[in-house]
Image (cartoon, rainbow, N blue to C red; front, side):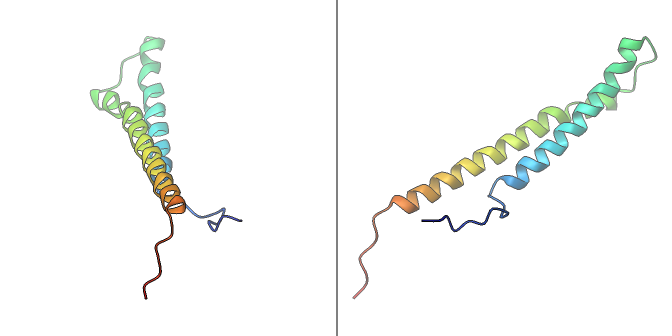
Length: 90
């Protein structure tokens, strides 16, 4: 039996995973920009750049929340599929 979910439909945690990936990559770029002057021996960037580099961890947590949400939705769907049918009302 074919699954009724379309291949291009979004699962419950997909948006969180995508948003987390974007935030993570912004944090990764900020980390590279922040560390580069330290390695090159130039003047370091201000403190807010170090705060921006913390976005890597925030993005990782957001994506992790999306993964857990997707897992929970899959479990709910599996439970609903394996539950015995209820008797019809008379």
